[in-house]
Length: 310
Ligand SMILES: [Zn+2]
Image (tube, rainbow, N blue to C red; front, side):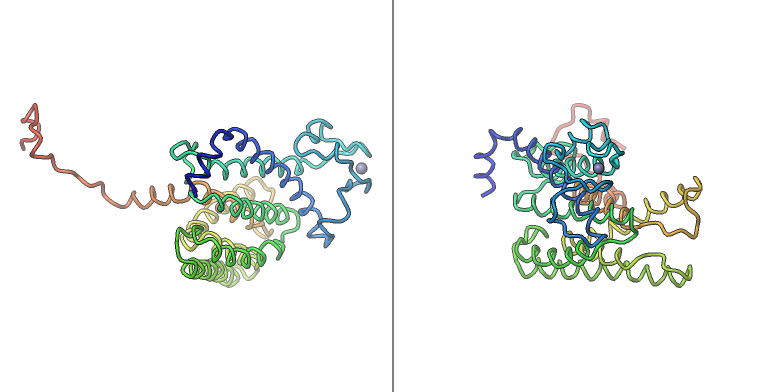
């Protein structure tokens, strides 16, 4: 299947690289709609896009991902007010991440750039696109509202478990049942670890150090990515989170008492895992294993035998 797909689509390689970027930008545009509407409990499909300042519907030609923002120089056409830079940022991040996920698969073994961990099953590409989209949605809602929508977290747990059963390659398995068990284990370990941390944090600081949304988010990631990804995530997200937290306090943008969204750090660590996870993991594990010393092969006659004496 893989070889067939590769040989058939290879001549279109550059086109697919471009297409994954453009598709990502379009999905990013939709995510912007979701980021605005889901916390306000508005429908994400109806009505069509409108200006958040003056409620004028936006015609399609002024709603082209990435281009519109650049073309209109960040001002809305209808009421000449500033369009939030977030619109451009979300479209750009989604486009780049969709492209990187595509490059994980690409069409030729050995052609993968940037040290990305390869995917051999092309069906995982849309699954990772889904995960990336959920993470971007959760991150930007968390930044603005300090909540992560249940549609992302609970929706993620349910779809992660179903997709793990349907596509065992998600957990590098052949058996549907074992893949399902890995997803369930990942959910329990992911949710459980952060739940434990949340209770511990509350005991320590006598306030909610971590939202329950973060607990559910890591549970969802456990379902999609497995237990190893969860351990990696707790390590990396807490490291980056504490560096960012301390710098914000030092820069006097936050105080010790203010609640800092943790979801974005979980999302960031998860994206690092999806793109480069096992490479980093193996490098880390190898740091603790002493390098094997191979004794000189006695069958090879050394041109300089003195080298091997002592
Ligand atoms: Zn307007």
